[in-house]
Amino acid sequence: MLRRSLATIPVLLTLVAVTPAAQAQMDARDMEICRQQCMSGARDADDPRYKSCVRTRCMGQPAVRRTAPAPRQSAAAPAPPQGTWALGSSEALGVSVHVQTDEGVIGIACAPEGVAIRATNGLFRAPALGWITDTGSAGGTIQLTPGAIYSEVSGPACALGVPGLAAATALVLVDAPVVPKGRGLGYGLTLPAGEVPVASGAEAQARLPGARNVPVPGLAAGLGALATSCPPLAEALRQPCP
Picture 1 (tube, one colour):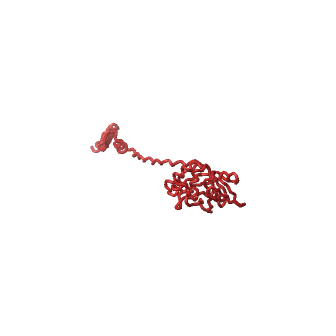
Picture 2 (tube, one colour):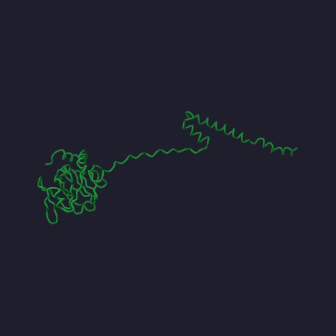
Picture 3 (cartoon, helix red, strand yellow):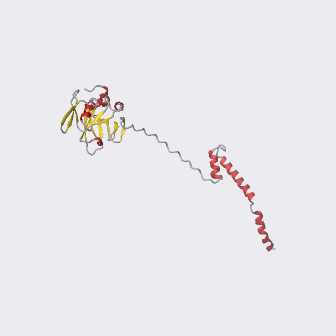
């Protein structure tokens, strides 16, 4: 009798084993229960929360991580073309009205005592860099400061002749000091052989080999823009210099 009972055990185990059809039915029921649980925390079947819950909780798929888009960087203001003066922050000269040339940068900045005319040291071919407008409306000298990024001359805008730059159509650089002789008396170029008198930058360029011509597009407008934050320059541009 005991032997017969033991023989019937495999048959009984076969009968109670879950058939594939039954397993599928159970999976479908569990899935429906899971879906209902997801729906309890969502608005409707189109709710992203419902879809995410079904995907991760009921179907076992990994959660989709959404990364926030990288913040859009504002485009930097384009640099003015070479040969055009503009007000801005120069890496070499700081905030100034400046122009980029093949040899360096020259510009005008506001200074405690008025304004400063600055030139990167790459523009120097001698201990002094003279400048004079083509029309003779202004001129002066910047002495080289060895080892510095730039050299400058500073003082009252009228004393440096900066208002005269606004009327220039070209700026001439010479490798020698330019000494103003007084209103209407022209300038003296101090050369090793002696002083050479000139009336304008155009004459200096004609008489002195190696003189360089710097274009002035944008210079007048740039000085006007700088004057809005530089009262000494604004006053010099508003009233005729003595």
